[in-house]
Length: 477
Image (cartoon, rainbow, N blue to C red; front, side, top):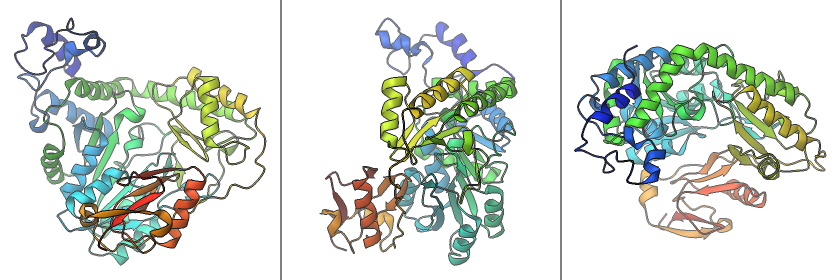
């Protein structure tokens, strides 16, 4: 490979007088934080460094190299996270008013794309795994039924893997969707490491998805906010480029771009070694997890090899620790990890905590996590009562999302909202699936779900209403 973007920055920045943005002018004496943040390498799009939205030089070479490394035909660097990739991808394959089929557990950026493009969604609900009380796989049957029932839809959007590492049967799903003329977008933000070794499942790229979005920073050694978009055909890539120019910044950080380039080069040059080290670290954790008696770890320890209801498969970088069989909640487990073991988990739910691993983990870090869980486990007792799971309700749409999102609204107590059209999105964690989105009718099932979630101290995220215990509904519907 030729000169890296970082090498070019290191070579060029010290010898040029910056009569251009940014305003710190690479003057590290100006403020201490500039030195800590490597501002001496922070430039804008100037001659010799290519332009992200019209790449023809070093950035195009870097993106071509990334496509080769990830097994894609066309790859774009993203510096506004996976969100800009999702917004651009959906805009690239739809026209205002189109219908799309999408998994209900999609990231909120997908819902934002619905509103921005005035799209009509047909939802597929993921299955549920009651053993862990998490969203499970999207079934092939549910995709088949949705396509058969909604023949006006031409796009399918799904999330795989989930936050907890659950994967769906992407090859079968993509193949069926393609046979019926649908374009498939896969939010694989949590799976940029997939497909590089047999230890991890194959990626959505290998499954033939038309657009795949990766968050490099989630599991691979790249700075926060860096991501990739992989596109299957040149024609679609051309439209994706046009949409990225709409949604992505026109002042991309070359520090972030250099991070992406450096990550891709690392995978090319040392990928086999580093993935082997990661596997070794996870297997070291597995050995520790075998000693757990009360806590359960999805796919590890005594749970490894168990058939899991509604779960097509797991990818092993995620460590979801369940407290369902214990006398503590996930919140209490998180506090024990923080206060007694100086460990900060990624996500906390009433049913457990999620610890994310990445290529930077080692045998030592994973054994440390294992030892911490073992120490906590020795202090626990079995649960005194069965913890009742919350089942996500299904609701009906009455008004397009884009219309409802902008319409006048009022706030009502949750208990009094039955029959009203929602003006906001409400998400309960776990399992992280929107209970209602703008334009949908609140029903009794959803009300009971939200009240039970509140009673259980689940996290409830609302997009509009900021009054505790109330929800935003359309004023005139």
